[in-house]
Length: 242
Image (cartoon, rainbow, N blue to C red; front, side, top):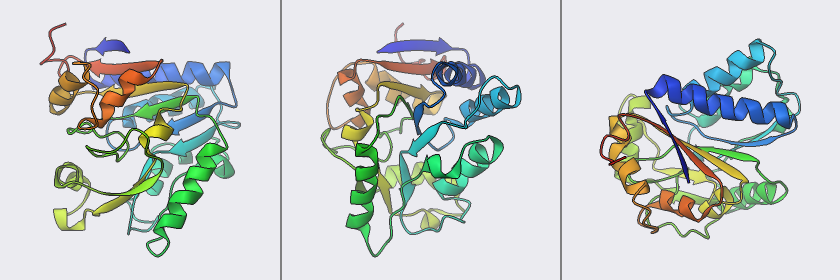
């Protein structure tokens, strides 16, 4: 696991963006695994800038997102489908048919998971972008999730719902379930880039860098991967002696 220490979120976003941008230049038909939430927004802004500067093109790029809420429509501003279009896809030349975002039909949850898992089985993700939850979740893989888990429906913990309520009007609006790529599928990526910045991620970063591998802290599975880069900042590393 390689640690890249940055001064702040802006620098971390630039670093992560550059890693992905350079990879796109090297392999125009790259397959990217993408994340949502506040952590990757700056990275997506850097990629959009590189596209506008004609450094990269998304014409051959394929993407597979980690997760999506269950029970809200794709036209809802809080959906990850909406998020990805608003923060990246609408601003670059990616083909719609190359975009893959899981969707869980409330009436066909098992079939929805099977479909997305089969889609993932058909490809190999070159770079998987991740954030990390305060409880160590990656994607929506909450504590106690098996490292062998594939795409499934997860019951979101109260901690995760509380962390995400800032995107909603109230905690009551935050969905209780989500569909998520499983840890086993995340670990299949050739390279993983995890972004963790800010004081609110300090405890999670401290535990991640303790190197203890346990299902109690899902992100610890990354220690079992051969190529992981953690892009972090001074505040997130404030509890780590380094």
